[in-house]
Image 1 (spheres, rainbow, N blue to C red):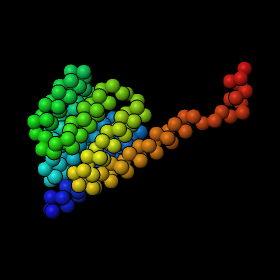
Image 2: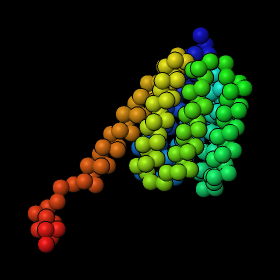
Image 3: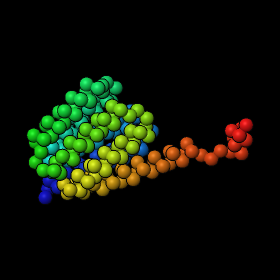
Image 4: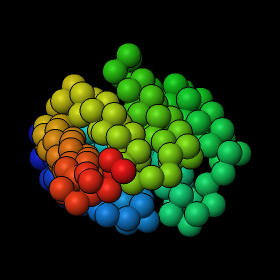
Length: 180
């Protein structure tokens, strides 16, 4: 029982970092908050005894460090993806549920490698957050599950607000100019 309480406490702090990454206006800050969130998730996963989660998170921490330094390349993408699958499968003690951290880690690696705009990265983070939310609830890590859900809502809010901001209606003067 003590492990659940401590793990959920650490998870609350990690989800505050996740929320901050979802609200950040720069790609660099998003990556830094993601790295801190990953470190805290490693500690929480130790409390829950989730070995596939811990192994994928350690590899993800390395990936996040490379991303923050700006030197995450195609070779790193393939190495971290392969390591995540191999190590994650070797230490998986949760059956099918234990595959979720593996899928989430690989998905986020591809997001970090392939996507470069804040909005596209946020969409990738949204998908990743939904995977982790499901996993957290299945693991009884309710703080993470709720935090992931709140972060997903925050991310959706940012995306819709950002799209509205960029799709503002044309003023009368702008409409006349665009008609000519």
